[in-house]
Length: 129
Image (cartoon, rainbow, N blue to C red; front, side, top):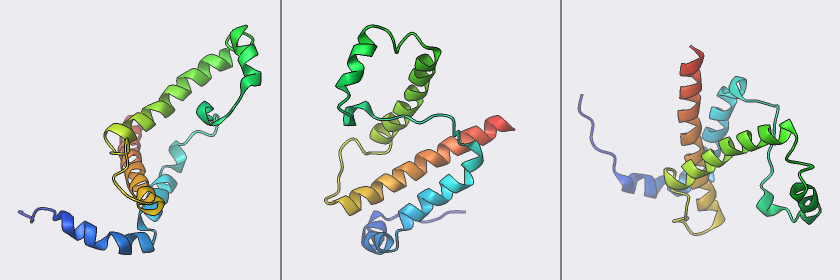
């Protein structure tokens, strides 16, 4: 069973049409929906680089925050989140965008996120069996 090799120009020619119909976003959200039974609702994380939280720095320095078990749990979960971003940057090709404009960059991000989620869902389902 021999199939012809993928021609990259086909994708480039059809990218606009795929973006016009939000195909990458629909693909991403369809994968997320299929994996909804695997998702945790116990924790959320906030990227600290986006928050100017100088008020919390005092409690961090005097160990009022770090002494709690919940802080340790938060650090472990944060590592899982950082692993996703690391994969998206190294394997997913999002360290630096190759595209001009928000629309093309978002399109690439949805595809990279969908690829990561497919791999992750496959691993989680395999472990559940």
